[in-house]
Length: 433
Image 1 (cartoon, one colour):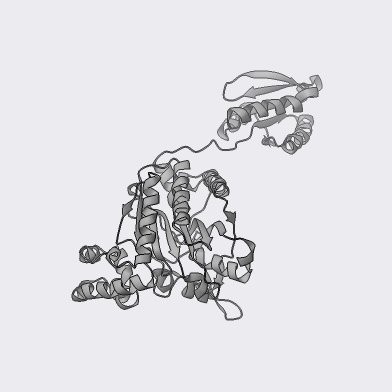
Image 2 (cartoon, one colour):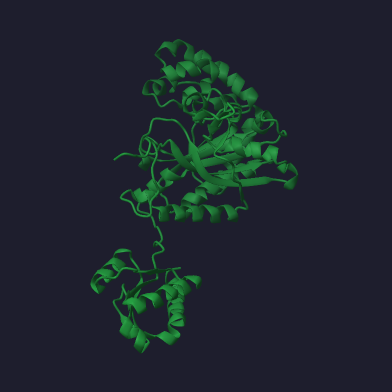
C-alpha cells in the first residue's frame, strides 16, 4: 500500500477488528465523562493542540521525560519554536492567565477531552497520539478538593463498571520537605551511582526523586531500601496528607500509600495519586494526578494552588473491552427503506428525508437488485426494521413493515405511515433507554 498511518498512531473507525477503536465505544465513554463532569460542576475548556515550546519546558519541567525526550517540536514559517501539547495542564494554566479568568469564579473547575502527543516508543497502551480526559481545580488548597478530585476519578471507573482497580497515593511534600528528602536520597544513592541506569544517572542531579519512579529492574532493586519521603514531610504537608487519608477512610475508599509514587511531571507538590490495574500489563496506570502549588505563579499568573488529574482514554477502553463491561447498543438505523421500482424510489427518497427530519434514524437502499440481498444487507448493518415499498404497493397505498428481530411483518397505510413509524420509534426508544 502506498500510504500507511505513521508508527504509533491508530484510526478510530465505525467498525473495526480492534474493539476499543470502534467509534461508538468512544462516543459512549465521552458521554459518561461529560455527564460525570457536569454532576461535579466542572466546565469544559478546550485549548489548541500546539503552543510555544517554552510553555511546556517551563510548565512541565525541563528535567521531565516529556520535555527531555518526548516533545514533538517544530519551527513554524516565522521560525518560532512550537510543540504539540504533551499534556493538558500547562495549556490550561496559560489560558487561565491569558484570558483573565481569575475574577470569573471563586473556585475554577475545568474538564477537558482531547489528543496529546509524545514521541515515545510505541507499545501496547502507549501511543504517539493518545487521548486524555482530565480535570483541573484552581484556587482552592484544601483536602476536601483533593478528596473530590480523587472521588471523581474513581466514580468514572465505577460508572464504567471497571473492576479490580487500586488507588495508590503519596505525598511528595512542599519545597522544604523535598529539599530535605533530596539530600537524604542523594546520600543513599551515591554508593550505587555506577549501577544506576543511564536515565537515572541523568536524573541524579537534576531530579533524583524521579529515580524512585524508574521502571528499570536494577533501579527498582536499588531504591527498595531508600529512605521514605513520608519521613521528611513538613508539619503542614504531613497534616494535609493525614487529613486526606482520614477523609478517604471515612468514605470507605480503599487505597495504598506508596512512598515511591512521585508521578512523571516536575510541577507536583504535596498529594500525588494514581489508579492502576493489573489487567493492563506493563502499562498499568489508568490515570493519576496531584496537587501543584507554584505552577500558575511560575507561568506568570497569580499565586494560586491547583490540583488535577488526567487519564488515558485508550487504556480505559482497552480495559473495558478486556473486562467485557457493558457497552450500549450502537445507534443503527431504526428503519431501512427498500424501494422496488422507480416511482417507489422517488417516493422513498422524500419519505426518508421526512423521517430523518422527525429525528428517526433512517437509511435507504438506492440500488436494489434483489429483495433478498437488500434484506440480508439490512440485517448486516443491524437495522431494527425494514420498510418495503414497491410500485404496486404504492398504488395500493399499503407498505410492508418488518421487524428484523422478531420477524413480525405488518402492513402500514400510506396515509398514516409517518405517524405509525414515529409511534413505533418512541416505543423502541423506551425499551432501549
